[in-house]
Image 1 (cartoon, helix red, strand yellow):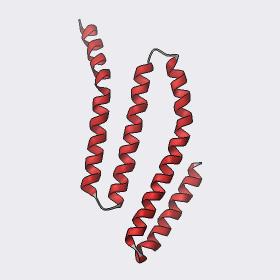
Image 2 (cartoon, one colour; image 1 turned 90 degrees about the horizontal axis):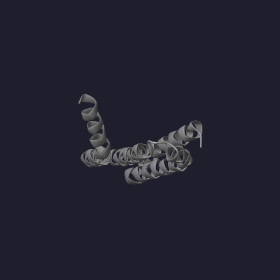
Image 3 (cartoon, helix red, strand yellow; image 1 turned 90 degrees about the vertical axis):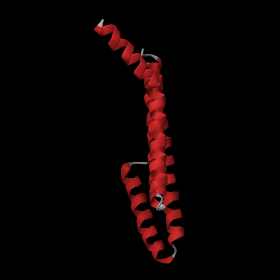
Image 4 (cartoon, one colour; image 1 turned 60 degrees about the vertical axis):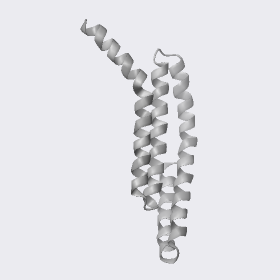
Length: 127
């Protein structure tokens, strides 16, 4: 799916949800959530192909573990963002903030081995 098709689908969902909001607000929210999830899974399918190539390249480089951590962090960030956006659409801003906090914390924990190695390299460099 190209950005043009994705944009058209998103705009169609917005117009249909605006119409539904006048009739049944709950159905409109469910419609938007369904549209967001549909587009998210389309993006996941497309990025799956790119991630395969990146993994192939990383296996041949000396930065394999670092690239894997970056890919995982990107996945966590995307999942947290989409989930938080869905919560905001449903009017649950506090829940959205907590989802974002969980995502940030998970990325921090995931990156600790990289930070440890970076500090070790800096320490060796400064000695």
